[in-house]
Length: 546
Ligand code: 16G
Ligand code: MG
Image 1 (tube, rainbow, N blue to C red):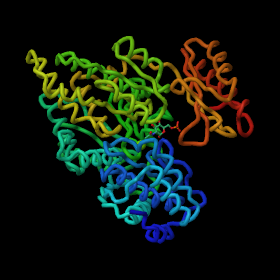
Image 2 (image 1 turned 180 degrees about the horizontal axis):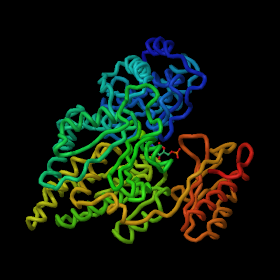
Image 3 (image 1 turned 30 degrees about the horizontal axis):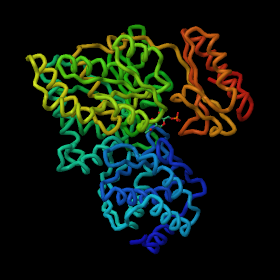
Image 4 (image 1 turned 60 degrees about the vertical axis):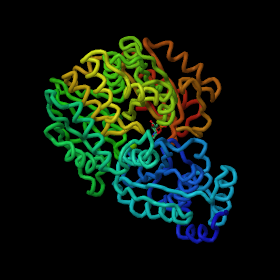
């Protein structure tokens, strides 16, 4: 069987390539101004159909979102059958298709991909697609649909969903009717699964004061509200703010997880009541950070590192109490605060692995542990239970009533946690369960360790691709000589640590520095940024980089 060239060519003619359409399928898929994305979406539709055919008709996901980017941007990501990110070997095909300069070239590229990837076109294809709350989604989704239709893929429209809900749906479709069945393949099924697990874990506990959730004015707002209706406010008191996802211009504007993490302050015009718990979702609800103000009004961020420590400690206690002989591990990136790594290894005694930035790297590494906890400092993460651990949790005979209780909690936790990808709603529940069981205030959670002062700066460079790294991005290999200069700068600072990596999502190089004090961390960041700028910078050197 061969590609229906005429159908593809005709459909492609309705989605001409914009000269500025994004060129590379990166860590976050394709992302750009929404006006440039029509052809990209159509071509991603074609690729999703091919990917499904390659995998003998297993369901593939397409999510139209640009996460925490401004409202005028949009983007698209593919989801592989187990709910994980598209396999990296296929990212190049996405890039090739997106760059084909004409309808004719697109047909030729498509045929080439079919050949190189050894796709059997006679196989069926099934694709589930969804989108976030951006105004540009409706038209862009139509372009995806045209791509799917051109290759005769069976289609399921998930509509307005969070990114993690789409990942959940993909896994459910592909495991339905098997011993690994992940759940009902519907958003209602998702709510039911989480609500049942929450009810098991929360019933009989002394409720904590309500959590206030900033929904970034995104898809997380309606979806969190739908979930709260299912679980009931009596068992989960939550107040939503920045929850208007329909008013134009609001999305991620001065609110949301990215704003709170990068600005280190609450969403604009949200007054923090001292000692109360707050959380912020990002625009597609796959990231979450927590925070609170102390009695003096000082803001305290509880980021992905803090969530990892909280979750790992709780899960390790449950494992121990239940008598299950499985091992917990934590996966971080170089951005994890040094104090968090020290806490995990020295206080919790849990093995920590460092991997390059990007969810796919963390997810992959976490799969090698019996129970793998992974979080990026920016609030993206989840917990993975290996198949043998799941079997042990389901078959283990507890030796005492307290072991039985711990085991029951672990079982519920497996259902509470979205194991396909980081999920703001599910991670919110995970944190809330731990705080509920420990009866902790946010300050008690925060007391585990104090972050080392740190600074993240951007440096504009001639060519960020000239920067290559190794050792999980902790060493820069090229430009030659740069690492030696960084080492020298770091040596001069007490508790100093610094690294440089090219961004995967923006045209810049990022410099991270931490040190024992605020001023030395800032100095180190400025110094390393200055070194990068003098070696490869673009434009005049700023007096200071932040
Ligand atoms: C993407 C990644 C995120 C990472 C960020 C780094 C996924 C789904 N998302 O948003 O994990 O933290 O890129 O951005 O992998 P940067 O390369 O610009 O620093
Ligand atoms: Mg996101």
